[in-house]
Structures are given as structure tokens and as C-alpha cells.
Image (cartoon, rainbow, N blue to C red):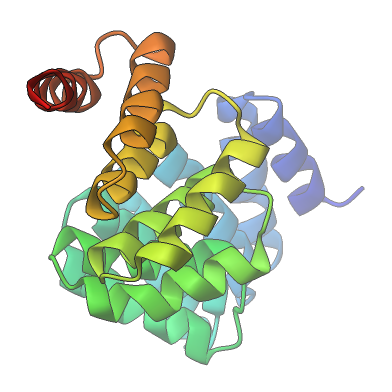
Length: 220
């Protein structure tokens, strides 16, 4: 096992000091290889040392401006700092460099979500959902974005898929209730809201919707 592989293994084991030492050694052994800088950047990102992480990613990009994983790492640094426009630039560059993975499409979509650009987010969340059909978070955000774009039938199917992955997903039940209300199916909506509240009693949106629907049904 070479130095870099050892460093990555130490990082996985959460032996961060030893990982840092080995990443430094790997960089010293191959100072013109971007992969060492990228992995050290990943360690620093995990430790929330954003300023230093960005320096390592930028050094990797100086060596190879098409290093997709360096752009992805830099995008994550900016995302964590809520600098969503800068994050977008790097996520896009990562995709352009050939990094066609669910996480990068998902993160790019989420930068648009945080800026209320739901229409722009949708194709990236769709691609993420296609690439990783088993990730409940990705599927949920995709379904939520569909709903925000008025595609309620597709959103309903996406939320049901979330529940296949995670049976106790209270937010999926809540959103299915909201969709049922849009279809004027109050009793079905109430079932979904009841389920959301039973899973998560402090779910305020579901609890409020439940009360409103119960009141409406009692007046009929």
C-alpha cells in the first residue's frame, strides 16, 4: 500500500493526525501530482478548515485545471460557507471535466434551491436521482423540487419512492399530504399528516396541516 492509500485508510478510520502526516508525505513524494492535494483538501474540508482546504484544492487546480474532484471539493467549501454562486461555478466545472456522479449533480441542484431557482435546480436533481436511485435524501429533494415546479403527479411518485427507501420519512408523508390537498382529497391528506406526526411529533407543519384539515372536515 503506497503512502496516499495509507493516508486515505487512516482518514477513513478517523485517525486524522496520522492521515495529515501521510498526506503531507505523499505530497512531498509527488509534488506535481494533484491527487495528494485533493485528498488533503478533503481531510481539511471534513475538519471544517475551509480556508486551508480551498488552498489545497486550488493548488491541485494549478497542476490540473481539469481535475474534477478538485472542483467538486472547492464547490463544497463554498457551499458550506453559503457562497452558492461560487459553489455553482466549481460544481459545473467538475461536471464539464467529466465528473458525472450523483453527488456533484445533487450539490449543484441544491445551490439553485438555496437561491429559489427551482426550475434551474430540477434537471440536476433529476440527474442525481437517476444516478443514485437508492439515496433517500436525493430522491426526496428531487420530489420536493418537482412539487415546487408544479409537477405534482411526478412528485407524488418520487415521495412514494422515498418511502420505499425509508419507511419512516415524516417529510415524505407530509408532502404527500400537501399533494393530496391539491387534489382536494382531504381525508387522504389527513392520513398522511397523521402518519407524519406519529413518526415525528414535533413536525410543526404536519401538525398544523392536520389541525386545519380536521377542522375543515368537522365543518362539512
